[in-house]
Length: 226
Image 1 (cartoon, rainbow, N blue to C red):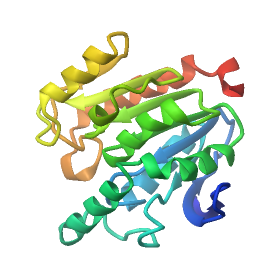
Image 2: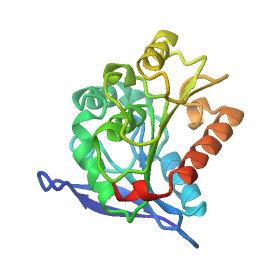
Image 3: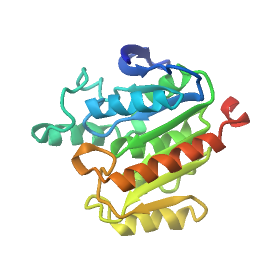
């Protein structure tokens, strides 16, 4: 079972929580999981446990601790959606969180991989471009990646989007594809949050997870030391 630990930002010393799921057996690598606007929810913690079972020592940093501490007890809370969207906007949808993300990366032995969902999907894109020590990144329905489409991932990166996503217009996905024609962008017959309970689509979630794990396996090599 996982546990809550404390990490520290190397730049300003800010201490923040993270959920840590150790591997029960052989270790394939480390994994940083970046949450959606809802925070390190029960679902995120369950995902961490599942990836740990697959051999990935997993950390899910609480990227909104500078605004509100603690892990939520529920996966979604419509009453707090506006507030949490404001948190995300105030960070530039993850741009201001990258030192905290880097602290999570640095806390794991290589190779280290990273993935994120929604808010975390955009933050994952930025981490692929700006953070150090990563071997590969997977971005799940990052709605604001298009804002940062001029940035280029420095490690192997894949993107997952739903064709019926009501929050991410098709033209945004097309703009990302046009800016990065060699980037693997996978489209699924699903809506937003197809991995999460709120929009779960079993086939899409299963295939996206498989493709992500394949990417991690292919990228487990010298890049871990970058």
